[in-house]
Amino acid sequence: MKHYQRLAALLLAVLLLCGCMPKIQREYKTDIPFVQTPAPVQTPAAGRSAAEQRYGSVKLLTEPTVLVSVFLNAPGCEEWTEEARTDALARVDTALDWLAQQGSSYGIKTLLYHADGGYYTLHNAVSGGEQSEESDALLEELDALSARIDTADLQAKYSTTNIGMLYFLPVGGTSFAMVHYADSGEEYYYEYACLYRYDAYSPDAEPENPATYAHEMLHLFGAPDLYEGSTDAFVDEALLHYIERRYPNDIMHSTYDTDGTSRLQDITQTISPLTAYCVGLTDTCPELEWFPALADVAPGVFSSGADPEPDELPGAVAA
Image (cartoon, rainbow, N blue to C red; front, side):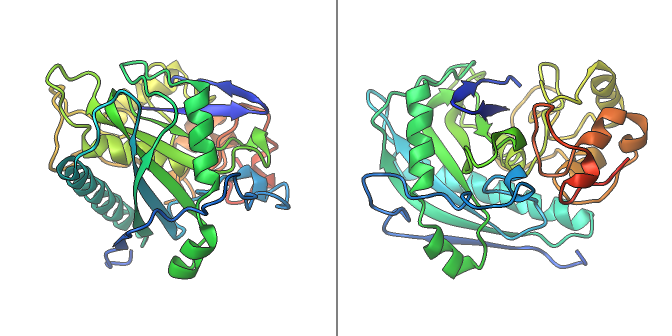
């Protein structure tokens, strides 16, 4: 449960409503919604303004967004069965329902669409495991695959250009997200979550739980890790101690229940006001006053520290 940063040509691993229910739509498709060309198509990032380049393909949770699920088969790995795929998609629905409920608790009607992208056979091997140190070659293949998404088709269907990929890997591992950093400019525009079939920390090959799905989805919208080992610039020891006392049930803090067990049918965690601010569900939170470094964070935007002042960024609240 982490997100990765990519800057320039380097791949840097970072451990890291108004009373109305939001609309969630799943569309099953026979064909994977990719442009079938031998080379990646030009990304929509080209030609965007400097302010627009702060965001990747997924922006704020308040904006209409399409999440496309693709099930990956890989050399030497157990293939996805239709039953396993159906079970995983049911947990995606659980995560999306939970996101809708959490948004409504902040008076926000979110609009999330879920498109089924079917299967894809990888050319590169998948490692998995607790560290999930996937090869640069695999991540580059996923980058290229993401760039082939048929954005014109999805925009016509859903009236939004905000698109994120959910890649389901066929082994056990620690799920993670590949997010766009403001420092990357036009590079690494497409954002995606890699969701493993099994929880790497479970001795019994237990499926990854829906809370982990929701946790990784929230990374795409700008949510930071709020646990020991996070390298988000503003998540220091003082903030971690505060989270432990004030928001121990925040989903960005843990995706397991307090007894360490994993739930497959529902999600008991919440989105705290701090996380809600980071993904755009609210324009302020008490922590802005108490933790000065947080005031430098623009909702929905990751940065390694080279970002401009918060009032220069779209959607930011100045300290």
